[in-house]
Amino acid sequence: MALAFALSPLAVIAFGAMLLMLAEAFSRKRAGLALGATMIFAAGCAFSAGVWMNGLDDVDGSVVAPWLVIDRFTIFFQGLLCLGGALASLLAGGYLREHGIDRGEFYSLLLFATFGAMMVAASGDALVLFLGLETMSIGAYAMTAFRRTSPRATEGALKYFLLGSFAAALMLYGFALLYGATSHTDLAGIGAAVAKGGPRTPMVVIALVLILCGLAFKVSAVPFHMWTPDAYEGAPTPATTYMAVVVKTGAFAMLLRVLLTCFADKASMSWSSGWPPAIAWLAVITMTVANLIAGQQESVKRMLAYSSIAHAGYLLVGVVATMRSGPQASASVLFYLLTYGVSTAGVFGSLILCGRRGAEAVSYEDLAGLGRRHPAAALPFALFLVSLAGIPPTAGFFGKWFIFRAAVDGGFYALTVIAFVNSVIAAYYYLRVLVYMYMREPAAGAPFATPMRSGYVTAALIVSAVLVLVLGITPGTSLDVAVQAASIFGGG
Image (cartoon, rainbow, N blue to C red; front, top):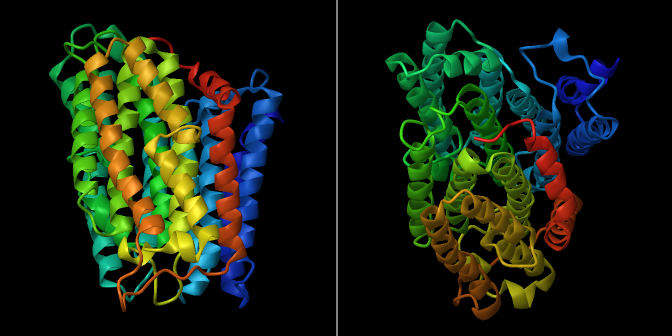
């Protein structure tokens, strides 16, 4: 009974996805599908919280082991993924109808993709991890191409699909090599065999490189980021929100689970022969390249795409810090994902709110004068941008603070300085949006943003804004939860 309750978040999302698919097939009324998807996600969050509150000590996970792992790390990510999915479905409820693409299959795709992401977070076996990864990815590919008449959407989805297929193949080949070297597909078994193996064999080294390449693609790290700007720009904005929040969160859950389970031995986590220096270089290149390119964009949506890549770089700094700071660094990554998720959902939701059918706000000029004409729409937009920039007292400030503190505690001073300098660079393009909203007027004859009226979008913005402020003013409780979730991983 305890195990059934522990598996309930996965079951709720899976059965909910099938119910919505049947509702779309046999009902002509689609008005309630967005609300239905949101309620299913809310139920998933509630069950995750219930499992957490009731503890996991009495859960006998041997029935599903080693394919699924039921621990606090899994439950934390399942709640976080359901929260991101709920916000994306609320935004879709307003956006899809406003832009004439209100088709019910979007919500089924969204739920099935979230189920895949939750499987990734809970996976204890390479085969289950790959199945969950592909379930998540296929849903994301379809949502990217959801606007069928848009060449940009088709181009973005095609790039995402082709590059994603290559990355998945690399990762699968890496796990196949690990199976050949260790005779295990379960992650714990792989980790134990690698730890006992002594010096790194060429097969294990090649497997690690291939897996890192696949993981780097999934988290949008440079130079594996090529698909991100086009996919984010071409997709409907709720789908962009979903990719930036849920897909990235699921990818980092996979990254932490694989590296800290399969490659947690001293040799693999050493600076001389392990993965930390490779991740450190990825972090530096990702932050720097993404921030420099983001500052040159004239499309706000495309700027936010590069911003999402830059945030992956900050998160990778926390992953590197796990080498010496252990669970503290892992907890900082988890907390950052929470703050980044609600801030990113809010900023894309604000962008959705600032446009109507045929006049979607995507450029800086579109937002000129918004603060004077529509202050109620500009205020939450400003709040979320400030949070992404890491300015107190918002959630984003503490997200970066804990990441940087974990890096300093681990002795990665140069990496921390580079991350801090990149945060300062990023503030330029975030504050640039505020300058246009509050200090510029639209040019004569230029189109300007006209906010839509949608209860769904407004609800998503309210929830995101409340969480950004609560996490910024009282971060202690959420950080404690992240520390408990990360405690399943030992020190490096």
